[in-house]
Image (cartoon, rainbow, N blue to C red; front, side):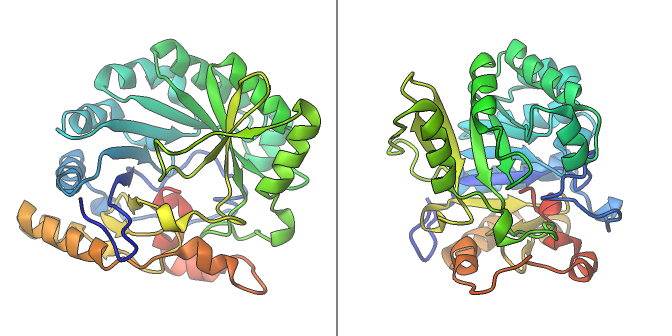
Length: 341
C-alpha cells in the first residue's frame, strides 16, 4: 500500500463522471452561470476503468462515483459493471442528489453498485425550492425509496446543515432515515470552491448539533471507528440504538486520517478537496503511457502528499469563501461540483 508523508494510505478514490448538475444548491452551485469542462476532455468509460485499475493496483479498495450529478452521465450502469469487475475493489458506491435514481436504481444494483448515498437537505419541498432552486423534492424521496427496494444497503443520507436554513430539521431527518433503513450524516457547511456565499456565522458545529439532539433524545454515545479509521463521519448512537453521523470538516478536520483523492471527469487528479492544483492524468493516458508509467506517476505523487487543506483553513483568522466568482470562472477545476465534493 502506498503511503504519503503523514503515513496516510491511498485507500479511496472518488470518480467524478460529469461536472454537470440538475440542481443549484446554495452550498455548491449558487451562481446563475458556470464554465463547463470541454466535452472532448471528458474521460470515456474505458479510460476511467483503466485509471481505476491502476489505482486499485496501488492499494485503493474503495471507489465512489460522483459528479456534478453522476446520473446525468448516460449509461452509468455500464461503467458500474466495468468498475465492479476490477479485482481488489471492495466497495463500489455512488453519491447522488436522487432526482434520477428511481428510474435507474435497479439497473445500477444489477450492474454491481453496492451502496448509494443520497443528498437530502430538507424534508420540506418549499425549502428545497429555496435551497436548490428545484420543485422536485418528491423525486428525491422516490429515489431513496427505489434504492431501498432495489436492495442497496446500508444506504446513507447526506444533509449539509446551514444555520437559519435547515438546522431545525435534524431530529426530523433522523426519524425519516429510520423509516428508510438508512443512516443520516450531517455535514458542516464547508468553505470549499463553489460555496461563494459561505460565512462562518452560517456554520452549525458538531458540538451544537449534538447539544440540540441531546435535548430531544437524551444521552448520545459515540460509536467506535476502529474498523474504519479513515471514515469522514464520526458516528453516534441514540438511546434507542439509532445511529447517525456528523462530518465536522469545518470545525474539527480529519485531515490526519484522510485516505481520499478525487479524479475529475476530465482526468485531473486532486489529492485534497482544497488543493489549489491537480495532476493531469488524461494527457499521459491518451499519450500512450503504459499502466506501469501511470502507476509510477500516481505512486510518486501520493508519496509526496502533504495536503491538510481543512486544517489549514481552520487556522485562517478571518475566514471567508475560498474563491471569488471570477477566480472560479477562470478555472472550473476549483469548483466543488467539478471535483466531486
